[in-house]
Image (cartoon, rainbow, N blue to C red):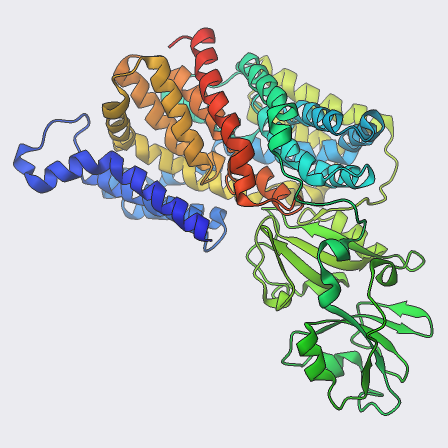
Amino acid sequence: MQVKKIVFILLIGMLLACLYPVISQAADNLNNYTEIIPKFNTSIAIVGSVIILLLGLFVWEPVPIGIIALAVPVILVALNLWTKVSNEQALSGFSNSATVTIMAMFVLSRGIQNSGAVQLLGNKLESFTGDNQKKQVGTITAFTGFIASIINNTPVVAAFVPMVTNLGRRTKVSPSKLLIPLSYASMLGGTITLLGTSTNILASQVSARLINHPFGMFEFTKLGIIVFGVGFIYLVTVGYYLIPERIKVESKSLLKDYKMEKFLTEVKIDDNSPLLGKSIGEAFKNLDKDLDVIQMTREGEQFMEPLDVKTIRSGDHLVIRAAKETLLKFIENKGISLLLDIKINQNQLEDSVQGQKIIEVVIPDNSFMTGQTINNVNFLERYDASLLAIKHNEKISYKNLKSFRLKSGNVLLLLVTDATLKRLDNNMSFIIEDDVERPNYSPSKIFLALGILSSVIILASMNIISIAIATLGGVIAMVATNLVKPNEVYEAINWEVVFLLAGLIPLGVAIEQTGTAQFIASQLLQVTGIFPPVVILGIFYYFTVLLTNIISNNATAVLMIPVAVNAAEQIGANPFAFVLAVTFAASAAFSSPIGYQTNLMIYGPGGYRFRDFIRVGAPLEIILAIIVPLFISIFWGI
């Protein structure tokens, strides 16, 4: 949170710096205000204030950013005297072709996953790479980039995280070495085609509105391949050595990895215990103590959640999660003996016969768990699971777990049964960090799913029908062929992204109509205008990269594309070149775990620290800040 506050303050400083020349001069002498195109006015001030407020809320994130974005149309209409946004324009984000296309792409991606195509490639990966670390990094990067170029990159990472993590553990390679390449490759691959990421689709719509130039399906593929190639070489050479081994793989025990020995204790119920005859629910649940019963053993048989109805008997053994001091206070005068000679290990808690297993579960950004506590959603009762610890950022929490407010990227350490594991695996709100037995997929399903996706690409790329209609047709085909069940359609869609687009698209309209984009562009050009156009293009690229590392990629595209277009027009450059630079930059949040969804998804499982992304990602961002503008100028001219 401290890092976010510092970044927020720096961002506000940069934005105010752009406005400083005008504000300072106006404060000194309004009558001597020099002419700037467009002239600073109340509309620009209000829209600029809305942008700053929005960026601040995105960094602070008191509620999910999708909900924050939904307030934008309301604010714009309430201030329409200055924002010049009508009711119809405020709601245009919901009916926008980009929003519809992105919704459909999430469902198409789910159909590809359900077909088994992604899992099949993942299974081939281990047999090909063995335990060669560099070969693993190279193959993961190549596979992920290829798949992310044709389906949305976020579900690709969600499907590959468990596979890559277990590949590392089985081959004694730290998952930390493999997960950053996985995320970066998905971002790099997403720049190859129009369908690779939601940012491309959104940028295409904004480009069509501003300069009447939507993106073709493969219009920037040649640049995307170069960018991916540079990223690939970087990751298998320099990047590989910069990625730290945060997770050690000497031990196969998650309990050891999480250092649970201080918080798990086995006790025995004595013959004289006043708890005899009571249920565990009566004896433990109403305590004003941070203490949970994880497992009961009776006459060699193990029981786990739900334990509330189990009656306590003499001789029962209980495994309790609590700090030692809390446990000692609880057992006073309760006829409970500590079994200090028994060390709790993973083999003791797990039971292959009864299907009990310790697993890690990642909370993705579109999970219903984000912003909630375990108690709020009755998670443990709903899924019959025992919660052992929560990993957040590089820290692990052991206390007050049920009141811990969850965020994207948090990792839950759970003791579950096979039935619970399958339920969690079937829910898009969780990413399971373990091998889950899945049914065999027939080649016919894979060919069918790939055939539907290929049809969508061909129809859209040849302009036979619009991309929005083509992707909607693909959704209908996926449902009709039972590759996606009707109820899965709603689950597959990342509604936070949809709400974000619906709220921010009208903000883009306001930025353009009020002259705010032109004003910000003119301020930036006052500083950068002395440079050649290709250097200015590079500056815009890197400024966008800094912004996308702080807020979402889609928000960055909406805010920066109008500014970039106006800057290009003011210096007589090719506006499409500037649109492309911003589009590629918006998908280059390599130096922050909070700027891109896939980075958040691998943050916890990789055991990373915030500075790890800066260490590995910042050099790549600098390299691409040179490569992208240079090749844009070669391919499209400036």
